[in-house]
Amino acid sequence: MNKLAKIENKEKFLEKFSIQNSYSIYKDCTTIERCIRSQAPTLSTITKNYSKNFTVKYIQLWLIAMNEFLNISRKMNKAQIEETARLIYDCYYYLNIADLNLFFGEIKRGKYEIYDVLDGAKILRWMDSYVNERLEYSLNSGGIKDQEYIDLTEKFPEIKQIGK
Image 1 (cartoon, rainbow, N blue to C red):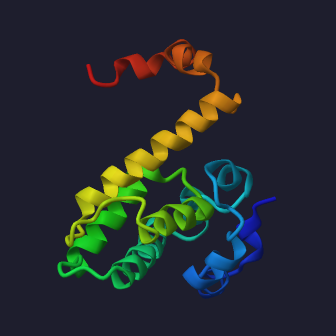
Image 2: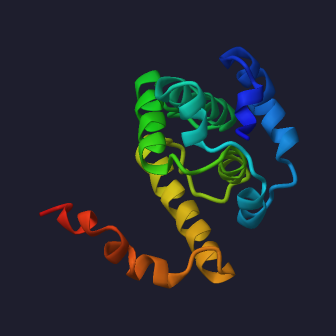
């Protein structure tokens, strides 16, 4: 059963999965493995239940909280936050709320170098790094088999047409 089906409206979702509540709910998700196993709602599931616009605005809340937390002189403006949230959704719709919690927590704890300026390109590079770690974990733990990638075009021949 869809876990979000129990949350009947957007306001209740935002209350349950507010950033502050997400810190508490997913505080034990301190590794990528724990995020994957958390069964937290994915961005695509949130979209399915509410809308893409709602999910992008939800990601914006995470970006705003991080932007406010960091003590830097050149913070992101509203347009940058909106565009970065849209790009995060478009590229990483499969991540879940526990992933967002871990990723933005790592930024706040200084895992990534900021140098007094924050922008969307930096955040997306950091997220690429996070996603690569996540993929590496999945490959090494047997969650995703190398063979699945090799045979993907055999299973879905229409993929071969992409980019031609």
